[in-house]
Image (cartoon, rainbow, N blue to C red; front, side, top):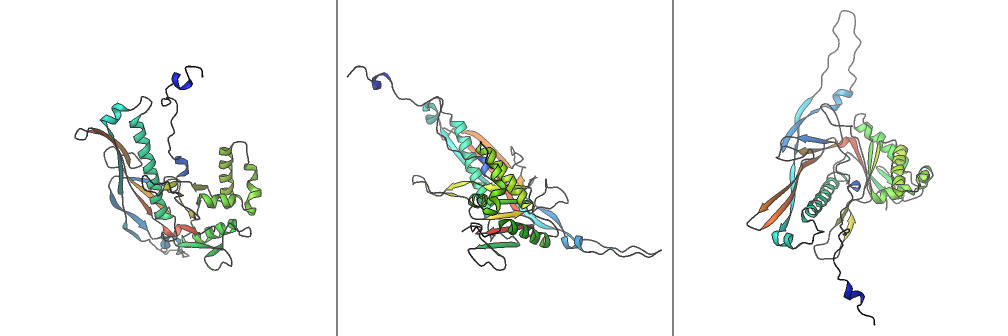
Length: 333
């Protein structure tokens, strides 16, 4: 054997231009995209609610010459409220770890991205629990069945003979009736439901032009086309993943949401005298909080000999108009 060998002339060290870092893409999370955000100065408060029925009742009368016009009014109350819960997590960087870290590592940046990913997952889970289920409190709930659907049911969309376009349009009419004329303009789909719809025979011919050379372009076109078929402004897909295994155990990954779809109505932006199915009240009153009600803190703890990076978010995800939404439970088998 010739000397020296490959092992003699090189000592393995970590690469300075690559490391394998796992952080989910924010594009697959919907908690900050579905409902408008309302910045609030206080952790809790109330807001005005107008009586919708008073606005849709026909009380206009004919007016005879020399007489007063008919009079009317509307109910108004300030009993609806929100309370912004505070969520937080920290990551400590001991001085000894920082001093011994290789040059290509960046403990502060790593901690920031690690905590941001964790908060994004937590907010998505909170959103799904609040809105994305048949028990969330929506006035209209429909359940998918494998055969012979009856009242408030539909044939599951994985069945080639099902009619998802008709089902969504029918649900929009139902919501408009119970919601005083507001038709849903967005739909949120679990990833497995979205993928199933793209292969549905009623849809596939209309979106096949989306098969472009770049996968990202195709995905955008497919979502836009699906929105057009449903006569909606936007289709959102939930791609967030949660690992439910304890630390040290093998990963147990699952989608945060599956088999469901949610139709909602949202305005372009919330304001005085506006309406929405849901809102996110972001508490911006804390020192250093952003418009999203979150803040990233970094401070030194001499008693531990460590630098602490801490993320905190204060918000309330609130279903403000349950009549303006429809949840499709078990949309696929």
